[in-house]
Length: 330
Image 1: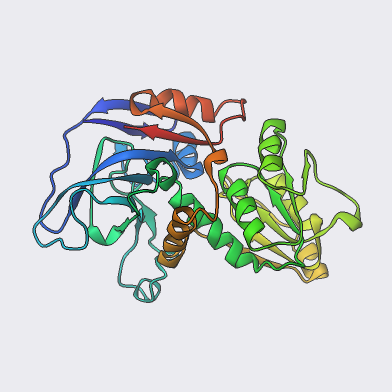
Image 2: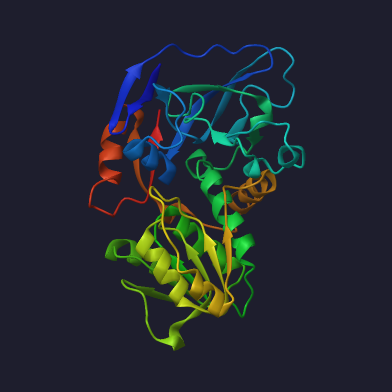
């Protein structure tokens, strides 16, 4: 079967590899669509999170069960499924409470084990969630990033009186914008340097879009979601907040950054990280999509055949910021 393999920073390759074998207690899934995540770009550029190479990349996927191993009853051949790609220890105090995203040893498929940028993937049935058969698998592939955004919105504690700023109009920033609209929030401003991404944000319901941070105190907001993962935007996000405001860190940083904690102290700001999601967030994301409470079609900008995955990564790491959520179709 075809698979996208990571060998080192900037070194990826489509190769023919052996189709995985479904052992007892496992499930073989034919991947229908797999999404390229921002963390996949961190892997591609820096080799972040990867424990050994080569490894088949990817962790966001939707597909169809084609085979179940002996002893598997939770899913059946023909089921449409999405994956919970988190790889945790299973025994720490957080895992025992169902908070795998807080596991000190947390990793993801595609980084610490074979991922989904392949025609097939073998996975534990406990890591699969069945989705309604009438839910387009192309949209189901966005369950995982939608769960990330849902987790962000829960951290933000939005209400009708909460003004929100979103830094970065990439997939997570835009999905957070969509969810803020149903929370609802009391006005959402999106900041990004890309005019094409700001156009998408406007179409998705942003009350205001800006190519630079506002500097007037009257423009300050109650909550800022920092989804860009850049040092300069982090500093600007702190200044953008009202006294008593909340900063939600949703982006991953490729380098260590410093923060002016005097500003945090002076304003009595709350700072919270938002790491992935829990299982309840994944289930909520499925419900939101299957009930048509949210429309994420505007987030999907490109669908590439798996054999063209290298071109997809070239597009996402170029200066052309029109690409948003890019899917691979094995």
